[in-house]
Image 1 (tube, rainbow, N blue to C red):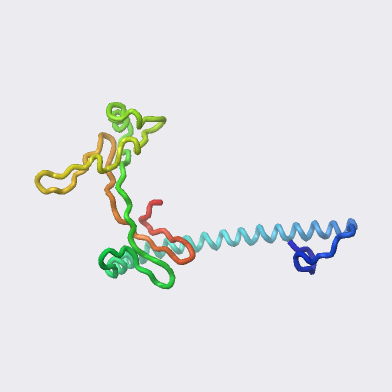
Image 2: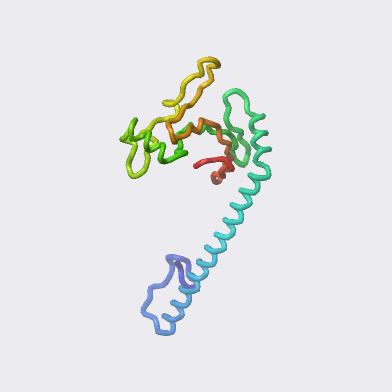
Length: 174
């Protein structure tokens, strides 16, 4: 930080300062630190306001944008690009979630005790595909989760990404 009218690096060497100059220097440093704190607080408030507006725009216009992008996509394309960013769909893999902890722990004790630590480790239990089987009549994939667990099937998540920073969609899980 340059102190005084000199550009950084061009300050003359100090030959010592008086008490009055030292007090003025400390006052100037304190003023700069106070200014930085004010700027940081104002910046945080501005960022919070912009993030609130981003969420509101997703609520107000997210479905329309999602439908526009879905209609625009053809073939294997999963995203639409414009000058200001990208919007598209990302595949989110299916996963297991605990619906009833006691039943899930009882099942895990019997079938995969390595999944039990201080809490149930779902990775050790398996993936949704481990609990999938085709319906004999329709061929549709049916998930039969262990007791106390539920299968959340794979799905697409809509996203919007600006060129400067990621803007999460209202249904994104990250």
